[in-house]
Image 1: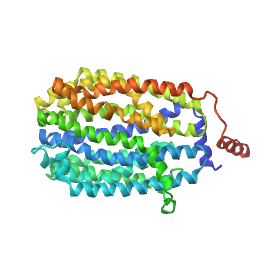
Image 2 (image 1 turned 60 degrees about the vertical axis):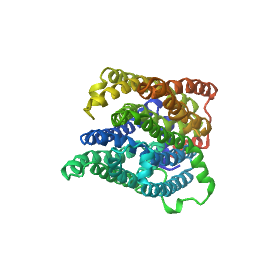
Image 3 (image 1 turned 180 degrees about the vertical axis):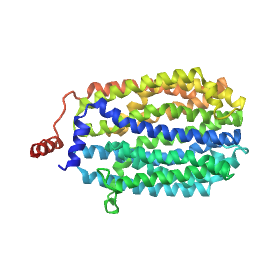
Image 4 (image 1 turned 90 degrees about the vertical axis):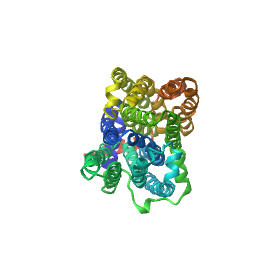
Length: 466
């Protein structure tokens, strides 16, 4: 066992679970919040161009989630396997998975980019664009499509680093891109008079710079697993394992795309203000929820590594700590958002019609925040330990099996209130479904830890130390 492996073992197995998760979560939360902030900054500056321009961002969310779906599938699919392999002491296998995952992600995302570029006008109309939104969506969207492969591949590298417990390095890459995007937005949009195209160009440049920073972390030896052409596997089973394990992420992100499109179509009869309002609320909700996602991503490598190492009690303790922390913080955020929705919406668009729709939707979203952690944490747990079938089922609930039917049916009964409240109702139903499943899992999880090869190797290595 080399010194780096010894340090990894001591960090992932011997450090108290709550302290380790908090340590891993802090850079991840910062990364998430910076990413969400630059999404909000985009919405803020684009909002200066008008309601239709604001709505265009909502239309393009569907495009972005397609690339994220590929990236998260390959990133989560390989990352949790890599973490378990490291937990078993198999570093060479881990390097094969990360190299292969990056290769297949780049290939798939480039194909998607080409298809989207050649079909961009009918595609944007299909996603819910109106005639008044379409010019803005086309100008902004071409840059989002061109930057798609960088976004997908960044998702792979970011997730693998998190699963290795290298969240700090992942933070550097994501924060650098986010800060650059925020700085370039006003320069390109107003300084160079590029309008919404400037916002798109700033996003594209930041995505590629972020990707190359993340790639450098692997090439410079700051990670346990290594990326190289020689490590790209030609074995179909490697890709099968990645796709199988990443399938819950693909489902979740694909349903985000479908639900985003369904939301835009449902809001379309109420005009551009409704589409713009729901786009703003969606970004605010993602920002509020970034703390929960960051905490969960700090927990995932701990769950995956310790499941591979047979340290079951650490998984149980880690889940309880993460869930309690997320619930406390989100409850505070939800109360503040519920009490002051109109000022938050008006930051991004001062159109009275947008504010009226947006403040009601935001209040419903704040209620949803309180019940979200159980569903999210349950999904993360099963995917981290390789139980992809249960994770896939849970991934279909929030944005799919519950949300889409509610979004299609409820507005016909109670009008726009059905659109505003659909996500809240979906989150409540997801909570009621996921709660018993995760309770049953932990009830049957062994209380006694197992000794694995990595434990024996560590003991030998410690005895040999002077």
